[in-house]
Length: 240
Image 1 (cartoon, rainbow, N blue to C red):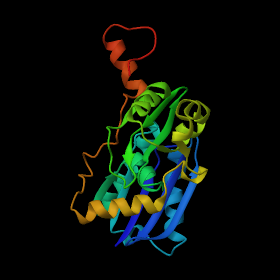
Image 2: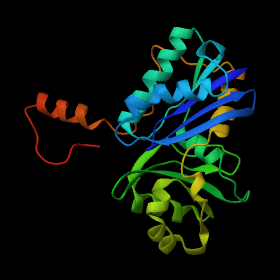
Image 3: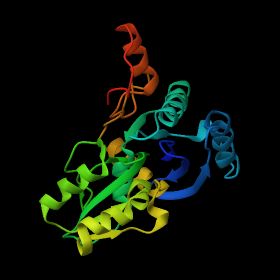
Image 4: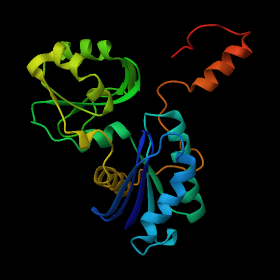
């Protein structure tokens, strides 16, 4: 089975082609504010560089977040459109799940992937070393995350941009109970997306391309402001 994986939930986009569990190709590119212009050309490139076309694709794997609202909308629309037009199945893989799956640590440690959300806030989840998720996806202040982890009294292996940006705070709070994954584990790896996506495909856990929605753990700013305006306008910080 030939799969195309797309994860655009962060400022570096991951594209990967898998044949079975083997990675045929993996692209990463920083897109900043031009993802809409660059995503499809990069998909064309990863396929053509491997002498493939969209008609060769058997299934789509979508990295569904949480993460950047704009990135998830663009990546989700692209992945869903490809699946619908090609008539191929699509499965969703949580970005935090893929990050945790790609992180290696001791069996007695927990894994905490963190994606930078904004100053002092991260998207995060908590996983066992085998990849089993223990908590809901959340967006929280770094202090709230660390208070939760201190109470668990276990070693924690961190990965992701949120952890790297806040590492001094994490290390000060958890001391020797905390370790940080290498920088290459800050973003989703194609192999993790493909492996987890295949597990869902094999289980028949496919999505409806028309109704699949990314994981939004906080309302998009534009929608929140629109709701406030409809209520007569509220000044200050939008609700989370």
